[in-house]
Amino acid sequence: MKLFASMYLVGFSKKDITAFLKGIGMMGWCKPGNVVEDVESNLFARAVVIEYNHQKVAIVVTETATMTLAMRQMVLKKLKKSYSYLGFDEKNIMLMATHTHSSPGGNSHYLLYNLTIPGYCKEVTETYVNGIIEAIIEADKNKEKAFIYYGKSEFEPHMNVAFNRAIEAWNQNPENEKFDEMHRHLALDRNAYQLTFLNEQLVPLGILNFFAVHTTTVHSDKRTISSDNKGYAANQLENLMRIQNPHFVAIFAQGAAGDVSPNFVIHKGEKEKRGETNDDYINRKINGTYQMEKAQQLIYYAKSTVSLPCELDYVLDYFDMTQSQVDPEFVEGMEGLITGDPCFGIFFVGGTAEGLGIPPFWIRLLSNFVSKRNQKLLKRNPYYENLSKAQVEKVILINCRKGEFAGTKAIHKLPIPDFVDPFIAELRRLSVLGEIYEPSQPLVPDILPFQIIKIGNIAIAAAPTELTTTSGLRIQKQIKNSLKGIKDVIVAGYANAYASYTATPEEYALQHYEGSSTLYGKYTLPAIQTHFKSLIHELHKEKSERNHDVSIKPHEFSEDELKNRLFKPFESAGILRAK
Image (cartoon, rainbow, N blue to C red; front, side, top):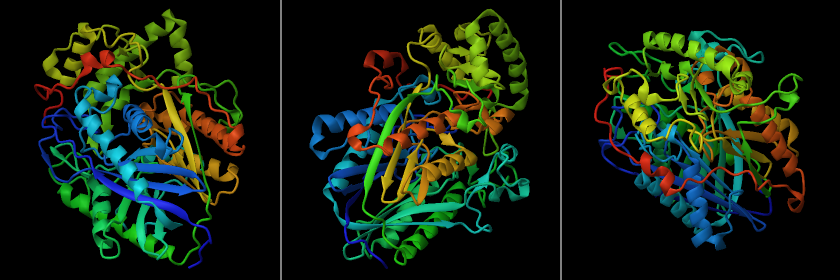
């Protein structure tokens, strides 16, 4: 083992954030029956604080479906108000979610992400926020001298840990090796990336592990809170390491998992893909054990490597994703390309093989209706012509800026009875209250944070969306080739906010689920790469010379803006989604 003479100060913490509220919807599956009735496993916020030469960063991972702008804003406000002496601000805090689909929702201020809950829930949000703050404060208090080691290791092909659920879209990318359905376990990044932290006595303090796989081994027919595969991995590793360090903390974060699933078998009598068995909780343990054992290997591997040099740097900026100019470098030299207002395509409601949505028959009917409506709008108003240049192949189902659903302004006037689907009933209720059409704020975020943290010669690039594998690999390659002094790059998804998916332009063209859920149009990924290019440019400057555009900030919702959107349980599951 080779050690650098200087050392970091490192502290870890873990806090319970299990927000048990019976009857509230869980975020992720978008199924009305997927509500909280019990707790299978508690949820935690795990934090690591790293300090060197009067610079520090806090990295927190919550066992929630999403990290929302609302949560981030609340965390920053409370830290500034009561704990400003700790020295944390929006640039040196990275907040991420594991994306478990079995955690209570209602933690966003944006209407659409609360539709399936339904509504904003202050109790849930504050439980998550308070846990994050407590974890940061305790981690900072627990700081001690430490070495940091970096390693990555690939899961062997025979290990059933992850599968590409969008293999046709993967094959559209020119740089990718082409695979068929039988080999979709190879159509992804099978590497686990890990920072391992050892104190002065070389006792492990904790890990920060990144591996891209959906936390969806527990399906929508279960009504229990669960930390899913990553939570199981964390708990098991913490138990194993307790002999060496009773306070060891294992943080399992997400990578570019947008098209990566742990589910690969349709068992007898089932319609959706599940894990190795037809028991979701056993599958949670199997998949979590794979991740835990890989992390354990990387801890031992660390002892044969050189510790990271001591250097900390970070940059974060907000960008308006609805009007982002795309650098020609990322679109084969094409000029004048731009993103547009956030929209969901028609195939968003179809779901995926592991989580089926509305049946194809209904989608076909809806698609014909929506296409005709969109064509009429296109002829009437230049706005829609400009929007189509950004959204290109997408048949727009939901215009999140205009509040139009299926090209209709008045949702409550649609001839669909409430009992068909509770989501429609909730939309109609909100429409009557004036919350839908031409909203003061879009139904999903428009301004998003992007961030890079450098720890030694390793960079962590944080994006607030579900990046597909190839989207993540392109960002990784871009930063690795352009950021000076970097040995490797970790790409983190579900970070600092949440704004659905990011498919590559080639994947987007197919308009499958992931592409249909890429909000800001075909050039969303190139726009994100443009923003990361800007962040890299700032990192190359001296800290005193860096530019930070304080005029671009996401909206902060008032209590008055949220009063009509508060949580209230669904009365029924609706005939459209009933099993």
